[in-house]
Amino acid sequence: MTRRLGLAAGLLVAVVTLALPAVLDDSALAVYILLGLAAMVTVGVSLLMGYAGQVSLGQGAFYAIGAYTAALLALSGAPPLAGLVAAPVAAALSALVIGVPLLRLRGHHLAFATLAMQLILLSLAGQLEFTGGDIGLQGIPQFAVGSFEATNASVYAYLTWAGLALVMLVTHNVITSRPGRALRALATSETAAASSGIPVGRYKLVVFALSATFAGLAGGIYCFYTGYVAPGSFPVLISIQYIVMAVVGGLGTIWGAVVGATAITLLVQGLDLLASLPGMPTYAPSVLSYAVYALVLIVVVLFMPHGLVPAVSGRLSRKRARSPYR
Image (cartoon, rainbow, N blue to C red; front, top):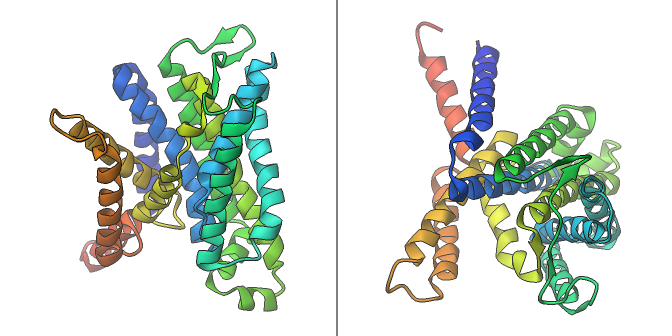
C-alpha cells in the first residue's frame, strides 16, 4: 500500500510539473525555473550534509563555475549543448582539486573554508578579463540542440525539471547502493567507518564532487536562461540559502530538498514583493532575507529537527500504526 501511494504521489507530481509551464505567466514561470535550479543544487547539499556529514557554505561557487564554463564555451562558438555538458564536468573537476586539501578539515573549519573558496572565486571572476570582470558576460546564445532553439521560457522550464529529475534519479541510485550505505556509516562516525574498511577520504571526495556536479549542471542551465552571468549573480547569500532549503526540507532526503527549495523560494518571492512596497528602504530585501532565514531555521530546529518531509512522513506512519483498519 505504501509503495502504491508513493507511486501515485510521484505520478501526480510529474503531471503537475509538466502541466505548469503551459499555464503560468512569464513572471511565475521565471520563479518556477529558479525554483527547479535551486532544488537541483539543494539535492546535492542534502546528499553532502545528510549522508556524508560535511558542511559546505560554498555550493554557490560550483554553481558559478558551471555557469561561467557554459557561457564561455557558448560565446567562443561551441555548441550550447557542449557547454551544458561541460558545466557539471568543470564543477566536478574543480571540486576534486579543491576538495583534496579542504576535506582534511571538519565541522565549522570546513564550512568556513568552503565559504572562503566562494569569496576567492567571486573576487577572481571580478578581476579577470576573460570572465568579463565585474560587468560579467553578456549576450550568451540561447540553448539549442541542432536546429532546435529554446526561444521561450517554457522550454527552459522543461529543461530545468528534466535536469532535476536526472539529479534525483542519480541520488536515489547512490543512496540505495552499497556506497550509499557506506556514506551513512561515514556520517555517523568516520572512525567507525574507517575501522570497517570504508575508504573515508575517497568517499568524502567523491560525494563532494557529485554535489558540485549537480550545482554545475544547474549553473549551466541558468546561464542560458538568463543570457548573462556576473559575480553579482552568485552572492554568498545563495550558498546559505541552499543550506536553509536542505535543513527545512530534511537533510538526507531527496524529496526534502525539493520541498525545502519550494518553501524557501516562494518565501523569498513573498519577501521581495513585501520589500518593494512603497516606503520600504532599499536595504529591506537583504535584511528581510537574513532575518527570515534565521527565524525559519530556529523554528525548524526547535519543532521539526529532522525537517518537513521526515516530520510529515513520521506523523503519517504513526497514524497508520494506530489505525484499527491497517
